[in-house]
Image (cartoon, rainbow, N blue to C red; front, top):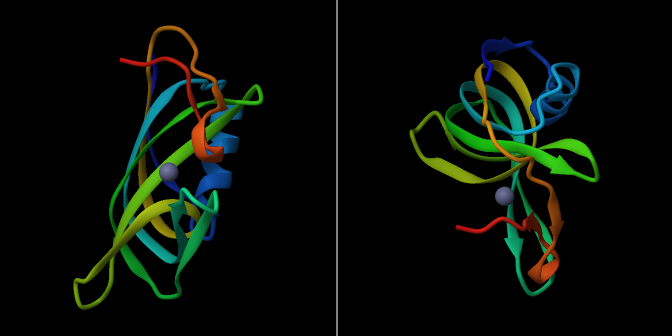
Length: 134
Ligand code: ZN
């Protein structure tokens, strides 16, 4: 089991970086945590009725107060699923499912999880989730 602690390059798009990092290091199942700062980002709220992610645009530099998520497989490829809470200059926060983020400075912690692989499969409301429960 490997763990990685690293700084994500300035200007990188975080989810693309995570996907590529997982592919390069052959990471198929992991927990992901981070703190830092974004130049701008798009979060989202999933509407169960329309089965769509409603985007929440954050067009300012924010502190990345907390990011947590995981990497598992979807269509045979490493797929990061990440949620984040961002704070603005006045301390107010916004959070949600991370769609995209331009990195100013991010300290990323990725730790592999042992055991059987997890693959995302179609589930209710158009979501793709793990079959393993409990
Ligand atoms: Zn999500």
